[in-house]
Length: 134
Image 1 (spheres, helix red, strand yellow):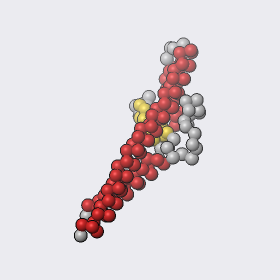
Image 2: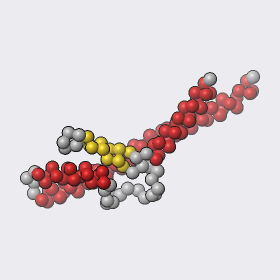
Image 3: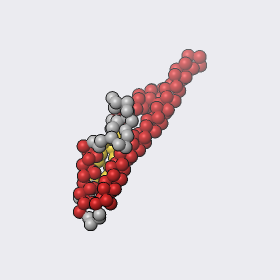
Image 4: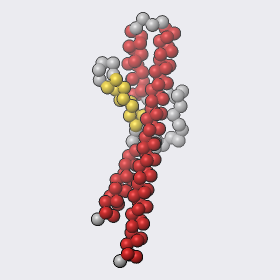
């Protein structure tokens, strides 16, 4: 019975690894109207092998978050140079947050892969030992 549980856990680990690899990571920000805003970051398994650069264009969701922030900044009495600096800082923060979310997801993927590998290896060892013990 223990072997069946280990096999089931290994299968669930494999499904979880696929989910972590192909599903996008989300970054949540506090919205300016009280509602939380979620930005979908590119998945680890995206078709492009390019890494996300801090100079690349923002996605639509990232642009929406930046626009909402900049609308609030423009409503303040700050000088235009400070507003422009805040826009650049906010843009890079959003991209850096997405990169961090992808890095965290990769770390979790490695952990799940390691645990699934151990379960699979233990299952193989158990199945090879059983005929000798009987």
